[in-house]
Amino acid sequence: MTSREDLIEIPVGPRQLAGTIVSPTIAMEGVLFVHGWAGNQEQYLVRAREVAALGCGCLTFDLDGHAGTAPFQTAVTREDNLQDVLAAYDLLANLPHVNNSAIGVVGSSYGGYLAALLSSLRPLQWLALRAPALYKDENWDMPKSQLNREELVSYRRSTISSQHNRALKACSVFQGDVLLVESEHDTIVPSSVTANYRTAYQSTRSLTFRMIERADHAISGESWQQAYTALLTNWTKDLILAARKAAIQP
Image (cartoon, rainbow, N blue to C red; front, side, top):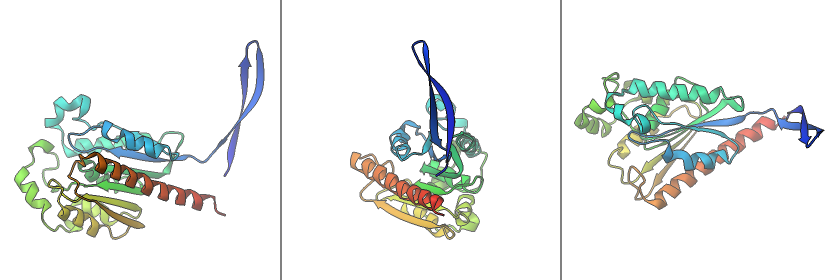
């Protein structure tokens, strides 16, 4: 591993001590966390801290129409929120300590859907999707809160080809590593949606599928939360350590 050296002076009362800071020049991996609809970044801070402890730069944020901007939620479109995710990704990728060729995204529900779309618009190495939602391509610029709920429920219970859905099409050409997590008793994003995502991922470097037994969509139980955090952290750790090992081998 290469390193850089910076000469410094350490003040000790009236005296100055000469010193040298030696630090690695290899930038750390970056991980972007995208919360679900009606959620907020607080839901991912614990997991972001766990991943950051591996030596990664992590970014959580609130989508427009959420948290401090919740009063405007009824007017927010999917295009608005996709632009939010793009802006957050670009900020993370441009941080001086982040390796912009080693960025992953973690998304849940609506955030998983947005993360899938992002994978076709920005370079990503890893995608961790928990109960990723799915929407029709039509009415893209309509406020999300105005989408027909009954049509959406029916759509999510059907088999959908990657050629007929923008998010699934992005999945079909993604060549990185994917973690796909399903809740056993999810009534909002049923198993048929996860099956569509699994089928779409045909070009990945690796695809890991896990089910959290007895869990609901929000993984509201503490044991389910802990299970998901451990699953995400261990999966991320394995990928990052493997990537670092490959990077330093001659």
